[in-house]
Length: 386
Image 1 (cartoon, helix red, strand yellow):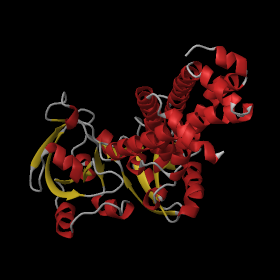
Image 2: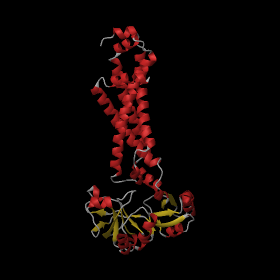
Image 3: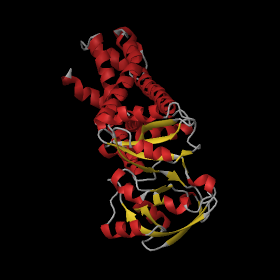
């Protein structure tokens, strides 16, 4: 069948405008399909980065917004399989003008001495780290966030409290890098705790935990929750990845949204490919009759037309894959709602899925027009008007 490839290629390019428009529509559809599959793969299939795989987050079982006694952290530290733990407190508050979206960024109160143990991927110059550890009014910010806000080491910033009845007067003591996301500000939790009313001093909302090894993560998670099973306030502990997906799930059923978009795009591609091949076959009935007079059999006619669909799908898949890869790079460099976004890329299974989807849809949608063309008799073909 390869000997007929020149004929297939020539037929594909016989109407350049239609070919360009068809390939473009296929490419855009497959680009969107590829991007959705890449996001799905990053969220639910890809391997967890080694540093993140060791981290757990523990919170009130009822709701993330509800607190629990701070002495729970001491009990968690003594749980078999736990290497270390620290507060992981969302401060909230307002930075400058709340109406400007860039002024909204994650800001967490932590134990600075534990931060670099539990998050070893945070890279901070040693002199800046020492200054941050020594200054209870200091904070560190990620490099992308510092660039967005125009912050430099030594700058002062104010967070006006809303969840907590106080304003934070902080000094930037360091700018860090982190391959898993650096859009967060960290400050000393003790600074906030000491200024809180007595009733709020000894409660926490989240604890970040470092497990001893990947093999002990599941066992440690169960052990932490089990020791509070009969307590007044029960805990829910999960991996950092699962916690991030659960937080993202507050926006809705992300998995269903991604799958629905993929289904809609697939249906659209089928319509585009089917319509293109139907138009191509309708205008070539006489040509098919001539091919049959030259000895072409039904199976060969069918293969020629399906071959055209395959060529169009391959061209569309190549262009769509390149566009999807560019979008992944663009999204990966932007703000991250979830750490898994920082791993977003077109992995080999996703690339294979793009080509398989493009080829499968093109062949399926063109099968009926191709079959109809193969059934045209010599007489019907020669009697057809151009």
